[in-house]
Amino acid sequence: AMTRQIGAPAAAPTASQLFGAGGGGAQEAAPLLGGAQQSQALVARDQTSQYLQSRHEAVQQVESTIHELGGIFQQLATVVAEQGEVAIRIDDNIDDTLTNVDNAQGQLLKYLDRVQSNRWLILKIFGILMLFTALFVVFVA
Image (tube, rainbow, N blue to C red; front, side, top):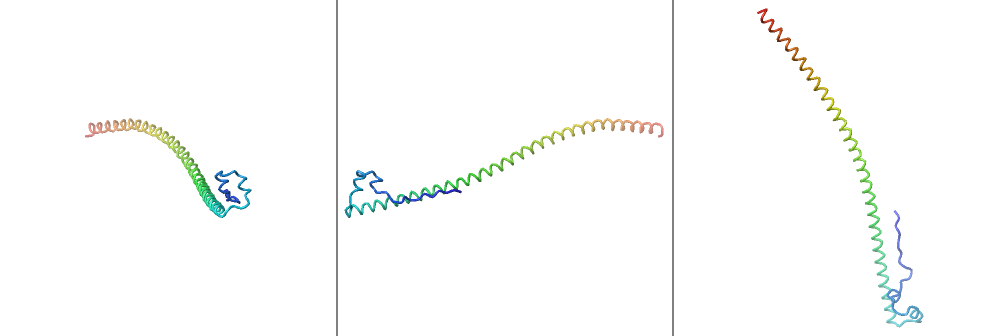
């Protein structure tokens, strides 16, 4: 996993650079600022530095969250691919089952035909036995 570290700037910009106050180069050329102005500049620089540091941390947190989401989506893609394979196997099994049911229906129809033809055979044998029984009763008894 590639993470890009965002570093704080080497020198914090001054308040006038951030907020566009003043004439730009005219203030930079001033030899020394007065004590109040210098402390205000330091406070502004500290605030700017704190702001930049907090933004840097926020960007790192967002980057970390995006990286975690990427991992989650990769896991999800793996699960979906595995489920796709399972769905294909289920579909193949259903096709095999349909073929087996069709074959079984054909076999049952053949069996029904044999049983019906055997019924006629059984009825013929029963008829012959009844005829012999009747002849036995009439002639022997």
